[in-house]
Length: 129
Image (cartoon, rainbow, N blue to C red; front, side, top):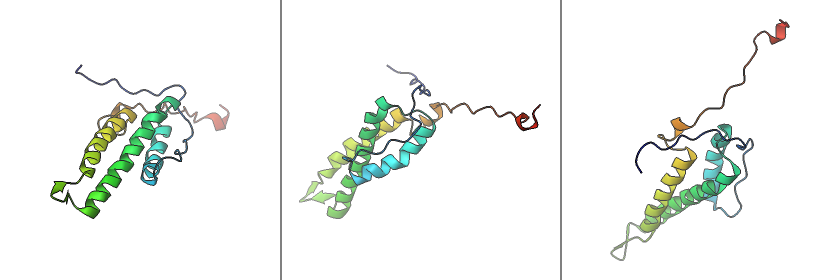
């Protein structure tokens, strides 16, 4: 089905505190978790049921980094054939794109995320008016 994707909304129950990255994530994935989670929490778009999407996204970011490191260290071709890490790189890059879009991390999905309404400040509260 074509057309616009639905806008992401601030969800009741959006996390107010950043969850810790799971211990099973590789270090590269935990670094990505620490990079993106504060923004998701501040916009209140991360909920408990979205954590698995976040875990998958971060895991694949880590896999992309590891695959690229293997290619950089061993060369693009091994014994005349394209390095096997290219398959991981290609598949994980696609997963990163999908996860980033679902989490509102891409340039096209970010504007669709609503900002939290700012608390109304009464400028005259201190004056007792």
